[in-house]
Length: 232
Image 1: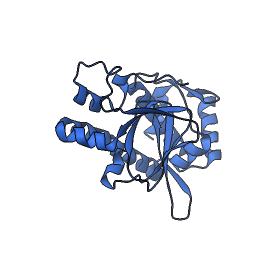
Image 2: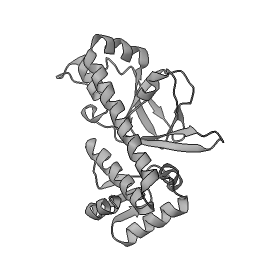
Image 3: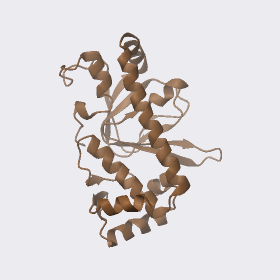
Image 4: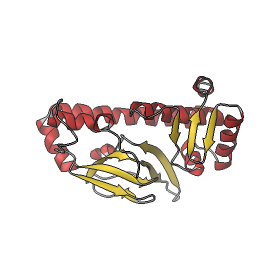
Protein backbone atom coordinates (compact mmCIF):
# COMPACT_ATOMS: atom_id res chain seq x y z
CA UNK A 1 0.00 0.00 0.00
CA UNK A 2 1.22 3.53 -0.74
CA UNK A 3 2.39 5.94 1.95
CA UNK A 4 -0.49 8.29 2.93
CA UNK A 5 0.01 12.04 2.82
CA UNK A 6 -0.21 13.85 6.16
CA UNK A 7 -3.40 15.81 6.73
CA UNK A 8 -1.60 19.17 6.66
CA UNK A 9 -0.27 18.42 3.16
CA UNK A 10 -3.66 17.34 1.78
CA UNK A 11 -5.57 19.59 -0.59
CA UNK A 12 -8.71 19.30 1.51
CA UNK A 13 -6.90 20.29 4.73
CA UNK A 14 -8.14 23.87 4.48
CA UNK A 15 -11.75 22.70 4.47
CA UNK A 16 -11.23 20.40 7.46
CA UNK A 17 -9.37 23.09 9.38
CA UNK A 18 -12.12 25.65 8.85
CA UNK A 19 -14.65 23.26 10.40
CA UNK A 20 -12.55 21.76 13.19
CA UNK A 21 -10.44 24.78 14.10
CA UNK A 22 -6.76 25.55 13.42
CA UNK A 23 -5.40 23.63 16.42
CA UNK A 24 -7.42 20.44 16.11
CA UNK A 25 -5.73 17.07 15.65
CA UNK A 26 -7.06 16.13 12.23
CA UNK A 27 -5.99 12.52 12.67
CA UNK A 28 -8.66 12.13 15.32
CA UNK A 29 -11.48 14.32 14.07
CA UNK A 30 -13.19 13.63 10.78
CA UNK A 31 -16.02 16.12 10.79
CA UNK A 32 -16.06 16.56 7.02
CA UNK A 33 -14.38 13.36 5.89
CA UNK A 34 -17.04 10.70 6.36
CA UNK A 35 -15.38 7.77 4.66
CA UNK A 36 -12.11 6.46 3.30
CA UNK A 37 -12.10 4.17 0.30
CA UNK A 38 -9.44 2.14 -1.47
CA UNK A 39 -9.57 1.72 -5.25
CA UNK A 40 -7.48 -0.84 -7.08
CA UNK A 41 -5.62 0.02 -10.27
CA UNK A 42 -8.13 0.52 -13.08
CA UNK A 43 -11.20 1.01 -10.86
CA UNK A 44 -13.47 4.01 -11.42
CA UNK A 45 -14.26 6.60 -8.76
CA UNK A 46 -17.07 8.07 -10.87
CA UNK A 47 -18.38 8.17 -14.43
CA UNK A 48 -19.47 10.97 -16.75
CA UNK A 49 -23.08 11.94 -16.09
CA UNK A 50 -23.34 10.40 -12.63
CA UNK A 51 -24.98 12.65 -10.01
CA UNK A 52 -22.48 14.49 -7.86
CA UNK A 53 -22.20 12.51 -4.62
CA UNK A 54 -18.91 13.57 -3.11
CA UNK A 55 -15.57 15.23 -3.63
CA UNK A 56 -12.42 13.25 -3.02
CA UNK A 57 -9.02 14.00 -1.56
CA UNK A 58 -6.31 11.55 -2.61
CA UNK A 59 -4.71 10.28 0.58
CA UNK A 60 -2.23 8.13 -1.33
CA UNK A 61 -1.90 6.95 -4.91
CA UNK A 62 -2.86 8.67 -8.16
CA UNK A 63 -5.81 9.08 -10.50
CA UNK A 64 -6.35 10.13 -14.09
CA UNK A 65 -9.38 12.09 -15.25
CA UNK A 66 -10.61 12.03 -18.82
CA UNK A 67 -13.51 12.84 -21.12
CA UNK A 68 -14.89 11.09 -24.17
CA UNK A 69 -14.88 12.92 -27.49
CA UNK A 70 -17.80 12.86 -29.92
CA UNK A 71 -16.18 10.07 -31.92
CA UNK A 72 -15.70 7.93 -28.82
CA UNK A 73 -12.02 8.57 -28.19
CA UNK A 74 -10.56 9.17 -24.73
CA UNK A 75 -8.92 12.52 -23.96
CA UNK A 76 -7.04 12.64 -20.68
CA UNK A 77 -7.57 15.96 -18.94
CA UNK A 78 -5.44 15.53 -15.85
CA UNK A 79 -3.30 13.38 -13.58
CA UNK A 80 -4.01 13.81 -9.88
CA UNK A 81 -1.48 12.88 -7.22
CA UNK A 82 -1.46 12.30 -3.48
CA UNK A 83 -2.91 15.26 -1.59
CA UNK A 84 -4.96 16.70 -4.46
CA UNK A 85 -8.75 17.07 -4.66
CA UNK A 86 -11.19 15.75 -7.28
CA UNK A 87 -14.81 16.54 -8.02
CA UNK A 88 -15.31 20.19 -7.06
CA UNK A 89 -15.76 21.18 -10.70
CA UNK A 90 -18.93 19.08 -10.83
CA UNK A 91 -20.73 21.39 -8.41
CA UNK A 92 -21.84 23.77 -11.18
CA UNK A 93 -23.69 21.01 -13.11
CA UNK A 94 -24.46 18.75 -10.13
CA UNK A 95 -23.02 15.84 -12.08
CA UNK A 96 -19.56 14.59 -12.97
CA UNK A 97 -18.41 15.88 -16.35
CA UNK A 98 -15.42 13.55 -16.57
CA UNK A 99 -14.42 10.08 -15.44
CA UNK A 100 -11.80 9.35 -12.79
CA UNK A 101 -9.85 6.09 -12.78
CA UNK A 102 -7.18 4.90 -10.33
CA UNK A 103 -3.71 4.55 -11.88
CA UNK A 104 -2.53 2.41 -8.97
CA UNK A 105 -3.86 1.25 -5.62
CA UNK A 106 -5.28 4.52 -4.29
CA UNK A 107 -6.87 5.59 -1.01
CA UNK A 108 -9.20 8.60 -0.99
CA UNK A 109 -10.96 10.60 1.70
CA UNK A 110 -14.60 11.05 0.70
CA UNK A 111 -16.50 14.23 1.54
CA UNK A 112 -20.24 13.89 0.76
CA UNK A 113 -21.45 16.92 -1.16
CA UNK A 114 -24.42 17.49 1.18
CA UNK A 115 -22.02 17.61 4.15
CA UNK A 116 -19.75 20.04 2.32
CA UNK A 117 -22.66 22.29 1.33
CA UNK A 118 -24.07 22.30 4.87
CA UNK A 119 -20.76 23.32 6.42
CA UNK A 120 -19.99 25.88 3.70
CA UNK A 121 -23.31 27.59 4.51
CA UNK A 122 -22.31 27.81 8.18
CA UNK A 123 -18.64 28.65 7.63
CA UNK A 124 -18.19 31.13 4.74
CA UNK A 125 -14.41 30.65 4.69
CA UNK A 126 -14.95 27.10 3.42
CA UNK A 127 -16.20 28.61 0.17
CA UNK A 128 -12.96 30.58 -0.08
CA UNK A 129 -10.98 27.35 0.27
CA UNK A 130 -13.11 25.75 -2.45
CA UNK A 131 -12.48 28.72 -4.74
CA UNK A 132 -8.72 28.35 -4.21
CA UNK A 133 -8.88 24.71 -5.28
CA UNK A 134 -11.01 25.55 -8.33
CA UNK A 135 -8.67 28.42 -9.24
CA UNK A 136 -5.76 25.99 -9.28
CA UNK A 137 -7.71 23.73 -11.61
CA UNK A 138 -8.20 26.69 -13.98
CA UNK A 139 -4.47 27.41 -13.93
CA UNK A 140 -3.72 23.76 -14.66
CA UNK A 141 -6.11 23.83 -17.61
CA UNK A 142 -4.45 27.00 -18.94
CA UNK A 143 -1.07 25.28 -18.73
CA UNK A 144 -2.44 22.33 -20.69
CA UNK A 145 -3.79 24.61 -23.42
CA UNK A 146 -0.37 26.29 -23.69
CA UNK A 147 1.29 22.88 -23.91
CA UNK A 148 -0.98 21.73 -26.73
CA UNK A 149 -0.92 24.97 -28.65
CA UNK A 150 2.57 26.44 -28.49
CA UNK A 151 5.24 23.98 -27.38
CA UNK A 152 7.21 21.31 -29.23
CA UNK A 153 7.66 17.74 -27.96
CA UNK A 154 10.75 18.42 -25.82
CA UNK A 155 9.17 21.51 -24.29
CA UNK A 156 5.95 19.66 -23.52
CA UNK A 157 7.62 16.78 -21.70
CA UNK A 158 10.00 19.06 -19.79
CA UNK A 159 7.06 21.21 -18.67
CA UNK A 160 5.13 18.11 -17.63
CA UNK A 161 7.98 16.73 -15.51
CA UNK A 162 8.64 20.08 -13.84
CA UNK A 163 4.94 20.52 -13.10
CA UNK A 164 4.87 17.14 -11.35
CA UNK A 165 8.03 18.10 -9.47
CA UNK A 166 6.39 21.28 -8.11
CA UNK A 167 3.24 19.43 -7.13
CA UNK A 168 5.12 16.68 -5.28
CA UNK A 169 7.20 19.29 -3.48
CA UNK A 170 4.03 21.13 -2.43
CA UNK A 171 2.89 17.92 -0.71
CA UNK A 172 6.27 17.51 1.07
CA UNK A 173 7.51 14.76 -1.25
CA UNK A 174 10.80 14.76 -3.14
CA UNK A 175 10.71 17.18 -6.10
CA UNK A 176 13.52 15.34 -7.88
CA UNK A 177 12.56 11.65 -7.52
CA UNK A 178 9.03 10.33 -7.96
CA UNK A 179 6.99 7.60 -9.63
CA UNK A 180 5.25 8.10 -12.94
CA UNK A 181 2.19 5.94 -12.35
CA UNK A 182 0.78 6.80 -15.77
CA UNK A 183 1.84 4.94 -18.92
CA UNK A 184 3.82 6.52 -21.75
CA UNK A 185 0.65 6.18 -23.82
CA UNK A 186 -1.35 8.16 -21.25
CA UNK A 187 1.34 10.84 -21.08
CA UNK A 188 1.22 11.12 -24.86
CA UNK A 189 -2.57 11.38 -24.83
CA UNK A 190 -2.42 14.16 -22.25
CA UNK A 191 0.37 16.09 -24.00
CA UNK A 192 -0.98 15.63 -27.54
CA UNK A 193 1.94 13.45 -28.62
CA UNK A 194 2.31 9.95 -30.06
CA UNK A 195 3.47 7.32 -27.59
CA UNK A 196 6.56 6.71 -29.75
CA UNK A 197 7.45 10.40 -29.53
CA UNK A 198 7.13 10.35 -25.74
CA UNK A 199 9.48 7.35 -25.57
CA UNK A 200 12.01 9.05 -27.88
CA UNK A 201 12.04 12.25 -25.83
CA UNK A 202 12.45 10.30 -22.58
CA UNK A 203 15.40 8.46 -24.13
CA UNK A 204 16.93 11.71 -25.39
CA UNK A 205 16.56 13.38 -21.99
CA UNK A 206 18.22 10.38 -20.37
CA UNK A 207 21.07 10.30 -22.90
CA UNK A 208 21.65 14.03 -22.32
CA UNK A 209 21.90 13.55 -18.56
CA UNK A 210 18.70 15.45 -17.76
CA UNK A 211 16.87 12.55 -16.14
CA UNK A 212 17.38 8.96 -15.05
CA UNK A 213 14.60 6.40 -15.26
CA UNK A 214 14.09 2.93 -13.87
CA UNK A 215 10.73 1.43 -14.74
CA UNK A 216 8.16 3.89 -13.32
CA UNK A 217 10.71 5.79 -11.26
CA UNK A 218 12.13 9.04 -12.65
CA UNK A 219 14.90 11.21 -11.24
CA UNK A 220 15.38 14.80 -12.41
CA UNK A 221 19.15 15.27 -12.64
CA UNK A 222 19.31 18.77 -14.13
CA UNK A 223 16.24 20.85 -13.37
CA UNK A 224 17.88 24.05 -14.60
CA UNK A 225 18.34 22.64 -18.09
CA UNK A 226 14.85 21.16 -18.03
CA UNK A 227 13.50 24.59 -17.10
CA UNK A 228 15.42 26.14 -20.00
CA UNK A 229 13.95 23.58 -22.39
CA UNK A 230 10.43 24.10 -21.01
CA UNK A 231 10.71 27.84 -21.62
CA UNK A 232 11.76 27.26 -25.22
